Every structure is written in C-alpha cells, then in structure tokens.
Length: 298
Image 1 (cartoon, rainbow, N blue to C red):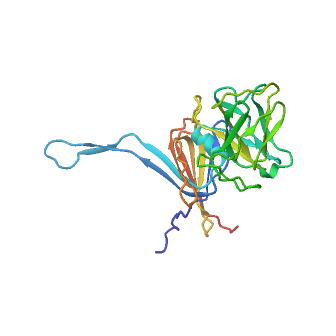
Image 2: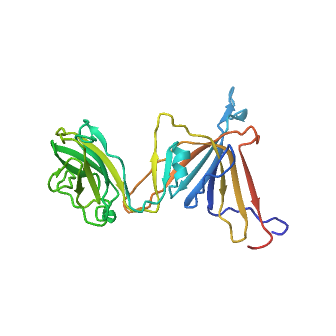
Image 3: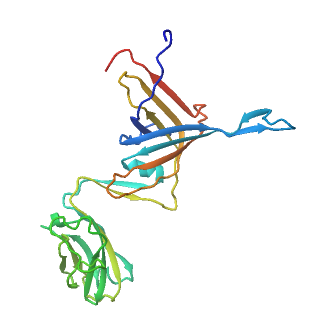
C-alpha cells in the first residue's frame, strides 16, 4: 500500500559487547553468538468486585527487565564478569610448563631435604610435555608411583599408556635420590630429590600439573570467598540486513547471574547467559534502542 514507511525488521544477531560502568571501556565482544533476547514484563493487578465477572480496572505493577544470550565461545572476560572469576592469561610457553609440586596427603612427599624437592621440564624432552594433572604417591621411603588424571593428551610426543585402571603411568616405582634427577617416563618431566637423606612416608601424596608448548593459556579461579558480580553495561547489535538497516540496544546497568558450562558428546558447547537490567539514575533509563536505515551501501 502506497504512502507507508518501510517496516523496521530485525534479522539475526551480530554481537554483544559488555563494558565497564566505571570508564565505559569494553571488556571484549561476543561474536560467536547464537541468540539474544530482551524482555520487559510487569504483572497486572486487577480490581474485582461485586457480581461483575470482568475486572473493573487493571494496573501494571513492578517491571522486570531480563536479557538473555546464547553464546558459543568462552573468552576470559565471560568468566570474570559473569562468574566473578579471577582470570590469568599467560604468555606463550615455548618449553611447556609445570606447576609447583604440592603436598596433599601428609608432608613428606614434597620436601626440600628428605623428599622430592621439585618437579620441572626435562631439557630436550619439551615436546613430550602434556596437558595433564599428576599425583605422586609414596610407595616406600625412597620410591614413588605417578598417576595421570586423564589421557586426553597422552599421545603428545612419546605415548603415555596407563599401567592400571587406577590411572598409574609408572610401570615400576621411581627411585628418588638425594640431589639427583629422576625422569618420569613419557611426560617430558623430571623429579629432583631433596638435599638430605631421602626418607618419605608410605601413602603420602603430592600433586602438580603441566602444559605443553603453547601460544597462550589461561588459569581461571572461580568461587573465592570474596567473589562479587559487578554491574556492567552492554551493547547488543542485530545482524546488518542486506538493506544496510541496523538495530542496536544499549543496556546501562546489567547484573549477571552466572552460567552453565555444558559439554555434550560430539557437540560444540554453548551456554545461556542471564542478566537482569536495572534502572540507571545517571541516564534516567534502563535501556536505549537505536536504529538506522542508511541511504548508501557499504
């Protein structure tokens, strides 16, 4: 019908960008995103009375504003802003890396004098270092067995088979010698004995983890006693249409409520984010919508 304007039509989802309410700088951008939905709702209070079967009046009560988004990638800022996590992004490790050996049961397995002083990458075997978590168990005063929590990276470099269903990887117990190195076969790692007479307590355990040669890695700690979920802003863009029409929503005061990390068989992981939008007293609004229909093509 002539005389009518072109209808505003939304198609798809382009991105969601959360930003700091302190300085307005973005935390990053969600580009691998499946959907986003913004809903403003209010329950209705109805007035009933007498023999009248229909309400005499109705009024909206409190408004709730919810923003949801399905994302299909897990950048570091997602954990920081939506889980209150402490995120550490590490630089490239050209020789792989290993964490500090730490006692778990007892205190004798890790000892600078009478036990294992340290664990480290074995020079010349860096290509064998795997992505794994290890447990060292004392089996006699001078020997230990080593266990690997998962075989997900066991074929990197030298193959690392299990020796039993209990996930032991050492065919025979490793002897720890004072001030000397003992290689952990197939792992690219070595144990160094303490400086004194070795004398560990049978049954004690210690643990460590390792990373292979990499370009980047992250350590993300969730659930500290000081965890908070700070408020943030967010800008959501619909997909740019073939008409060049664009549509944007900016929410000024968002509070996240965590998210699941699903892992399904033979399927890419995607998670559902939930945010509550609240009033921003500086902006005097909850969110703003902008749209544009450019007159020229890009």
